[in-house]
Image (tube, rainbow, N blue to C red; front, side, top):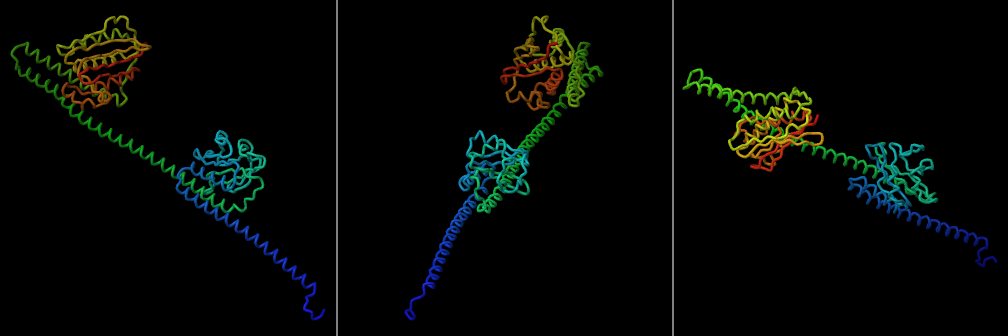
Length: 456
């Protein structure tokens, strides 16, 4: 009715429609706001996780620890049903799995893949995250597809166009990765840099260890050189004295004979014999020095042949018995030499070695005996020179076969000689295919020198 104040029905319906639309819009905006809050909460959570992961990766110098942290993130934040992380190893030749989830250890440890392309049978952009097609996952990687409803997702870790490593995740098929892409990109960069830094740390550690080892070896070499130089200086001083002594005797006795300062013919003969003995001693010293020089220059030669050990020992015996020795020292010789086999040696050089050992044994033995024994072994014969002399300390035994060392011990000053005899003997025995060794229980307990040579 006109003037009643009642609105027409059509106008009220329009207002109702507008209210419904406004309510619908408000509901839609509320839903969008809730989704935004959810996404913001997830993004905030992801940023917090990434920050925590970044702190861990910064403090982690080992790739295995980096891979372990990644596995936890993929399982807890991405919901991976299975996953494995590969790192470039073996000087860039292969990608080796470092961790695995969702399958037995015996399975994921066998998933070594070639480098630089771990998927040679499938075209793939190695520097971009993507779902792997079936062609790329044939073979060992099929073990990661733990259920029919999962697909494999590839996450590379690239640094300076080098694929440092990657992860493969078994995720629900059809899962949307767009929302996680920004966080995933940040994670990729963090991990790639961490792997690269771990490489640098490992290389630096290896170079440091190498430098330490080389420094230690250099220090040892310098110490050995200093010790050798000291031994050489002492050797030269001692050798000069040793050479001067017989030379002085030769000159002195010769002058006495020339000046006829002797009482009778017997005394003159004795002077000449002493002069001859001094000359032989001087010749022996010079021969030792010349032999060592030949050995060091590679000019020492031996002529190995089959020779009777019996004949050689019979030739050595009278020469050894003529060597000077104390009256209380007995020289004992083996019996039954006729049963000895022939040996492969240079007869002259072996005789030189035997005479040197016997001369040393008689010189360093004040009482008791010097005994020669022979034993036949499997394919070889051993000749031993056993004395009851001054013996050798355990710490000095290894040094006796080094040149110039004898001069340090003081025995050369007391007993005479250059101290080169055992060095020369060692080289000669090795050149003939034999060996020489020494045993002593210590000072005052005698020594045993053993020669071994092959049977002919």
